[in-house]
Length: 413
Image 1 (tube, rainbow, N blue to C red):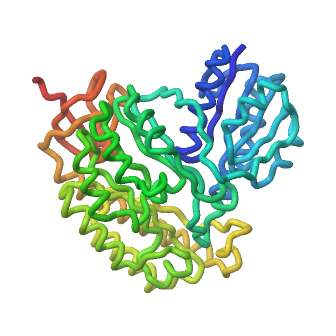
Image 2: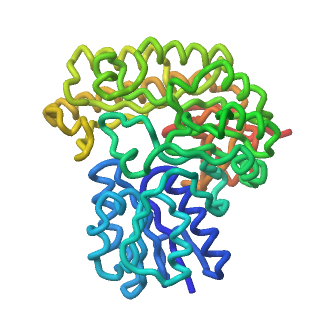
Image 3: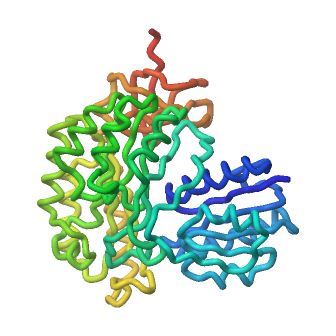
């Protein structure tokens, strides 16, 4: 019997799907994360945008096209938000939500059917260590969010922040046999195990065999304690994804983001005082309701001052049920123009950052073969292309710009 766990959305979803794959394999199933013929499918959905919800609903039809008679279980944020959108679809026998995903396995064991939404979020949901099918493994340490940014639906679906114990998270990271372990969660910055914080977790895994990379961070977590702990990690990736969203104080306030542009830039300077060559990447929303031309100019200015190596930018998308949904949206053409300006600046800043590494030595973690090149990422998150097949972490020399990264050559030891 074969089972597929098909995933849409964020890295946390991917990590949870890996745990479900592990649990199914332990129960004797042949498992896959690809959309291939199977007897059972678990669809792990996303609701971060309206488009993500639409793709989640469409995925049921995609599964039926591959396996017309297979049974389908649906979980995740889109199912939490609107379970009836899935429960009424042909072949769907079980719908659960975004919380306590580990219980899907026990529901399958007991042949449960119907809609089962679990609203508990008081304790962290321990799941099996994820199956790692790639060179980078994602280790989930936290779930839920207390921030309630005015544009975001996720806290209403995932629930309040809750964390693994340091011992549990550290054990999985130390046992990781992937080339790189990425510490992830819905809001990693809120990680707490009693009085212990993310800095304490880093100290607990300082001797991990895998390269350690942090997932997306909030401004407030960047302090001397965290950066000092990071410097003590034997193989720490100097890459900080520091969420921004806007460079305007007025817009940040409307977004319910609890910092100012100067707070943000101060944290960027603090990072670079400890890690001078660090890659700092970010997220920016273009065209938030009420954003003026001056506000947008402030965002572009902050991006230049922060010298981001990458910017994940996207146009504002209204999410029903959020506070921002009550605000008047900007015209679509304004959002589109500002998004294009951000994309252009992001490309310029990426090229400037990467140009400094031409002729320098980096460490490649290979991820895939593409067009005759081994493709993967350096410690500071530069996408590297090396001709031919390369296996395992390898020291390379960056030689020239190439595609969305740098062309590199293996250094002969």
